[in-house]
Amino acid sequence: MQIFGVDIGGSGIKGAPVDLDKGDLAQERLKVLTPQPATPDAVADGVKEVVEHFGWTGPVGLTFPGVVTGGSHIRTAANVDKAWIDTDARALFSERLGGLPVTVVNDADAAGVAEMSFGAGRDRKGTVILLTFGTGIGSAVFTDGVLLSNTELGHLELNGHDAEKRASSKAKEDHELTWEHWARRVTRYLAHVEMLFSPELFIIGGGVSRKAEKFLHYIEGIQAEIVPAQLQNNAGIVGAAMRATTGTRAG
Image 1 (cartoon, rainbow, N blue to C red):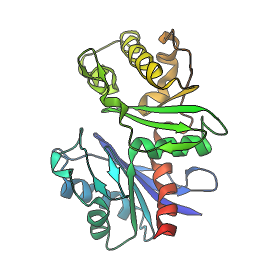
Image 2 (image 1 turned 90 degrees about the vertical axis):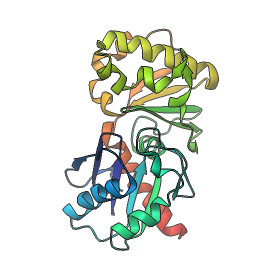
Image 3 (image 1 turned 180 degrees about the vertical axis):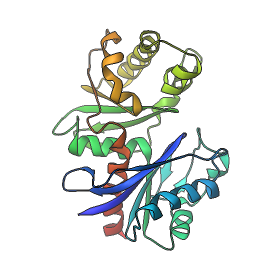
Image 4 (image 1 turned 90 degrees about the horizontal axis):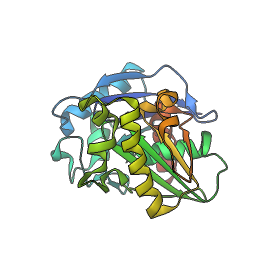
């Protein structure tokens, strides 16, 4: 079974049909740059470009980099335009896609669901936390496989700032940090999250998951196991497609 997944990020919009039996992309994904400013209409146009590239006419699952309630309404917009707040994203995207059935979910929650089903968290019990390091830091928290939605742990305070302003991959680029220096910041952040939640496993997702050999060995003093996401930066696309199937059935 194939469903289309789209992962909307602060820097890119990427999507592809997903083989839900394998938990992997059925075709090579297409990525377009997130428009700046990332207003609702501009982002919806980017999503339309990605979906129409594949000639897709079925249900579409989309991620959003912020809190999403009821599979539709946007409550926060840290790394996109503030006009998103209170937007009915499901209605917006469905209209722009010619009436296709649409489901919208927090981006890290989608990535986490995919990793728990097909990747590094598969069959893991206890508390598992996926953290996506990109434009910001997204989070997905699971206890015995059950998701606590919209946790947004990237906004925990770290040294007087939102943690994502200090330890995201964008912060690494903006401050021209070495992998070792950046890993020290990540270590402080993980220690803070570990103190609050005592997870058995951290899964490191986002684009940096492809480069785990450059920084994981610098992270020390964390009791939880730390592994890179197995689906890497495709986890959000896969998770979005998975949510689209449950959203369609619920509808």
